[in-house]
Image 1 (tube, rainbow, N blue to C red):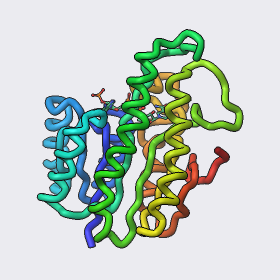
Image 2: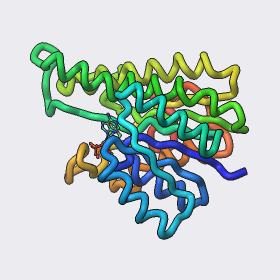
Image 3: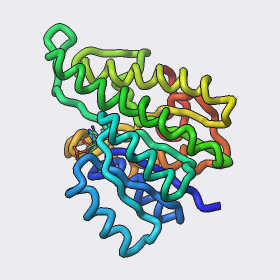
Image 4: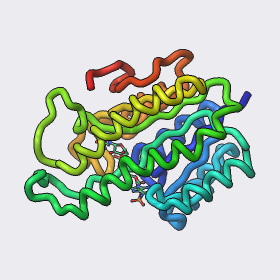
Length: 231
Ligand SMILES: NC(=O)c1ccc[n+]([C@@H]2O[C@H](COP(=O)([O-])OP(=O)(O)OC[C@H]3O[C@@H](n4cnc5c(N)ncnc54)[C@H](OP(=O)(O)O)[C@@H]3O)[C@@H](O)[C@H]2O)c1
């Protein structure tokens, strides 16, 4: 059966690359971006090579947008195998918990935590016809409790919470056969990671693609470089 993945935040960076790597191995990929004018032309270009690339606008903080994408999945494929919650923001460069703007914290939580929660809830009905349903949350070692540092406070808090949500959902959805994992892509040369980061975008996409495609994976784990890492 053809596999179907939905990825958030594919207008640039790691999300776009994950989608390309899945297309390359024959998957159907629903690319989504909050900016339709940037996201759709990219996918139109991809369709010149891969006819299994699809596009729908989605801002993960927009509840109506979440309902709309659910309707789109219902009307087009009616089934989903893999959801990749990739969209993320890091508003502040190095703000402390003491100094950060509370509005920045609200916005960061809305994108990095509430978005993945709302979208996962909306997609669960479409996993029921999948033989191997998986949710992959793109988190960060910045949210790893062991060795937690300071700075980037809003971002760290949001990713730690995303990791907690991963464990909770993995347990709630185990009975439905849906595996839920979280992962850090490493420090990647994207707009977020900057030009001095260790990894290329292709390398940054690797673990997410592996989690989507590996024959057997666990559930409720935190991964980096294809290995389970501590919370
Ligand atoms: N790069 C790194 O070193 C690194 C390290 C650890 C974890 N990560 C994580 O990896 C993921 C991807 O990061 P990246 O490096 O590819 O970052 P990026 O280049 O900054 O791209 C982020 C993507 O998320 C999208 N986005 C932001 N808010 C959104 C919203 N409300 N709705 C839908 N899309 C939204 C952006 O869309 P617009 O183009 O519209 O802004 C953009 O496409 C993030 O979750 C990030 O936290 C990255």
